[in-house]
Amino acid sequence: MRRLVTRSMSGTRAVVLLSGGLDSATALAIAREQGFECYALSVDYGQRHRAELDAAQRVAQSLGVVEHRTLRIDLGGIGGSALTDSSIAVPESPQVGIPITYVPARNTVMLSFALGWAEVLGAPRIFIGVNAVDYSGYPDCRPAFIAAFERVANLATKAGVEGTVAFKIVTPLIDLTKSQIIQRGVSLGVDYSLTVSCYQADAAGQACGSCDSCRLRRAGFAAAGVPDPTRYFR
Image 1 (cartoon, rainbow, N blue to C red):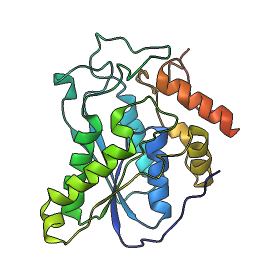
Image 2 (spheres, rainbow, N blue to C red):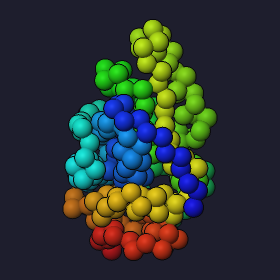
Image 3 (cartoon, rainbow, N blue to C red):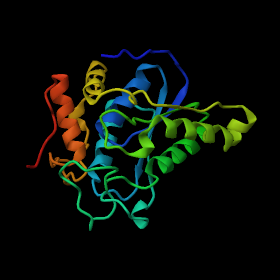
Image 4 (cartoon, helix red, strand yellow):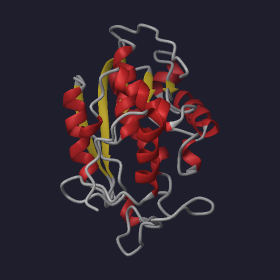
């Protein structure tokens, strides 16, 4: 398993985007391990799998963040995604190209909110659990997007222009397989039973076991040799 370099940043604040899923929980654990004071940010954007927001609260409490906030926006008003439009079915078989579960501009919007809070907090680091290996092919999970947003963060903020904060978008999982992510999280004490990854989880957080996110998660636990704590409703 690829070893991540740990550098102590004790006393330094970081904003961590926390969806309530497996990847974001692992990213939060890594930020904490590196000595950051973690401020977790979740976004209620009108997602159909709202159980992930409850999961985010559980994960934030379990991993001892300084503060956890949930911001509300309406990406459902834009539409165009099975995750925000209940009239569009969530695919339960592999798709060709970018799947309909892609939410237009989601990571751009979320990182913008995280950047705003980071500027207020004077936090130079923003952690996001994007992955470009075992993932659904979303364009806003790629290294090129992250690098571009980091440039924007330093060009478009008062703190960046005045040089009081040099923002860095940290993506500790971006080149790891799902099994490597799980192994890393287990080594850091992440309780994955608290997390919800399913795109159509029920109100109790039980997973369908068939959507793209469930398939990636299930395969990741199997490859990692770690018991899958996910509760499935079928």
